[in-house]
Amino acid sequence: MPWQDDHFRPLVPGDMDGERIQVRINTERGILTDFVVQYETPTSELSHEHVAVVRYDGSHHRAHRDLLDVRGRTVRKSWLPEHFTFSEAFGFAVADIEQNWPRYRQDFLLRSRG
Image (cartoon, rainbow, N blue to C red; front, side, top):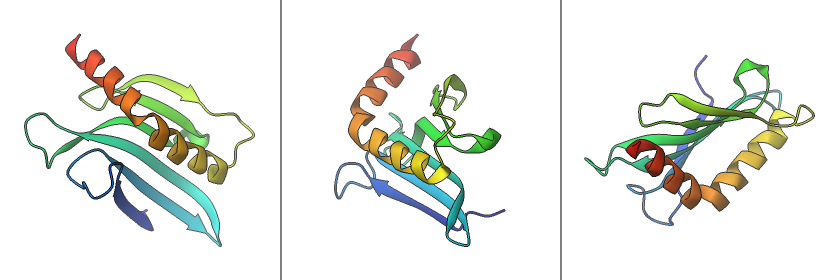
């Protein structure tokens, strides 16, 4: 099923080639039924290409966060509280990435060296 809404938003205002967040959502009758909120950083080779660092989503029928490696593989999965609706998890994910992306980036770069 294609995403109903799929867009990018810069984490540094006005810099679409820099750090960014990708948001994908599906709704049914006004209720969020699936989502992806992903923090992406530019690759060192080409600034217009990005690599995913952390992803929140609702796959497995429960909201969770995946920390990713440079190849996009999950390094660590953290489940969000079971009582979170997808709407609550979505809001939490956006706020967490907006607040913590510098730390996520630093940790990602350290993982990439090892």
